[in-house]
Image (cartoon, rainbow, N blue to C red; front, side):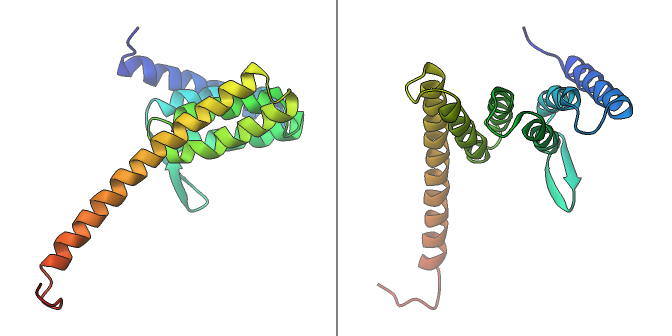
Length: 166
């Protein structure tokens, strides 16, 4: 089902209202606040909205995921199912716009799952495959960018009056 812009805005506003309520009524380290932040982050990822925090500019959902993960790591420990699930959602939100940035949460998710389960567990294998796919996608993007930059430099170098004629 296609989601219209109004539906995205409505979902983002509803998620923001829940986070606001949680901030007013729950302690700052409450796992319910973290869950609300994750929902808001997923909703915000659809909008592509940028934000600034502590002099850093990024997609708004990045800051929401970082806050949620900090709460979850404190509440459940850094190697928990909840953290692994949130890392997967975080990477899913990053992948369309920045596959290179999605690698770090996917690597951490793989490590968490590896430590929670046997290395041959299906979840561990799936996490490893997703990480490999994203790494391959990022590698292709970097290769294309490197080739583009090389061509631009060759173009400039061929027109430079300072290089000897060939």
